[in-house]
Length: 169
Ligand code: HEC
Image 1 (cartoon, rainbow, N blue to C red):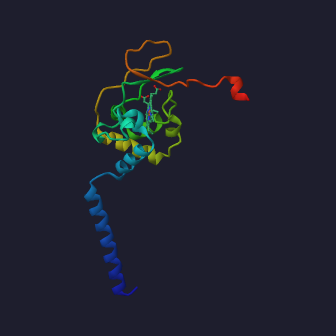
Image 2 (cartoon, rainbow, N blue to C red):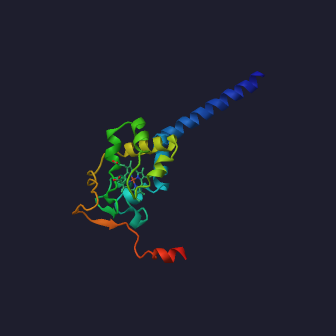
Image 3 (cartoon, helix red, strand yellow):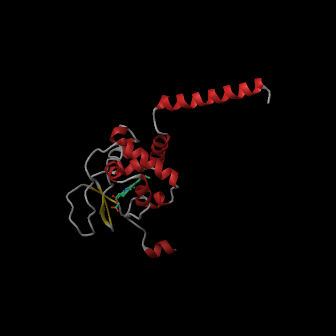
């Protein structure tokens, strides 16, 4: 390699390095957090875990995201409440979250989506949720079938199903 070419390479490397540095400095955000925000948005966590999000098409300030909901989902499983993910993220580290996030849950939590998420997406989700910081109260505890609950709830049970015999025809 002649010296001119070598100098060009060094300059190109230096410019590339400086660009990536200024990019990181410009946003000031951990790329994991950026990816986690994206994953949270496109996988619908806010629809249940952020009050008002689904009803408004996402018009909820980001500072209020993922605080859980006191409105339950009532079905044959009892009444379940979308957990406050921001408080949960403060109680564990990233490795523990990866295990915790893949555990089975009651409906309508789409837990199989979390189970099937790759480690990178799960870790990014953790970084993002953790970065939001703690906010809000814990969601009410799960109520088994037959328990009288005083919170509001959404009835999450099929209505007006065709009779079995009709469905077979
Ligand atoms: C359709 C509504 C719904 C959606 C969408 C949803 N969740 Fe949930 N989630 C729930 C409910 C309800 C529970 C409580 C389940 C239970 O009691 O077993 C829950 C529980 C959880 C838990 C367990 C909390 C605990 O303390 O046991 C985690 C973690 C969680 N959700 C994360 C997520 C993430 C991350 C997303 C987005 C990928 C998401 N959820 C999307 C409704 C939802």
